[in-house]
Image 1 (cartoon, rainbow, N blue to C red):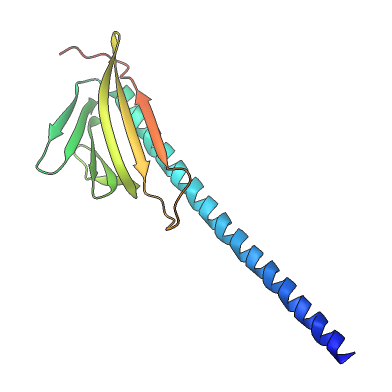
Image 2: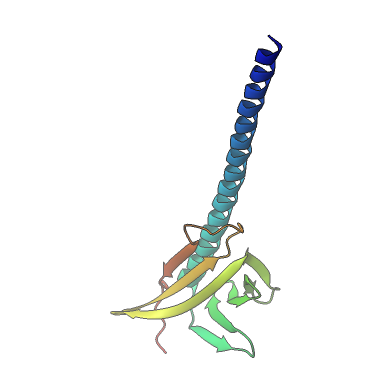
Length: 154
């Protein structure tokens, strides 16, 4: 009888251990999923802001080279809007204001223009840094396209 009790206690401990391990693994995956959705939402919000700025541009959109980075400048109704990628962040400035970080934890960011028939489109390719130390199966890559509403001829 005592041996049966010890066997049952051992089985209960094993079953509880497996249950707790499964529960903690599910909690970790849930936290990782929540963080991923937050990163996706942040990137989409930044991309929509960038697209709105491109569409609202009523002057020339141009690149300026500085000593260590490239700056995208566009003239709009509210003033000049500037985008810059530096130190793993995308910064935005509406003149004459100060720089604000619109997206952090960025691995790479490139903005370039594309000639598409009679229209000049702008493409922003963005890759976020994964938060997990584990190898990720899907890289967080985003591509945003925008066309200025008013075509400016040089």
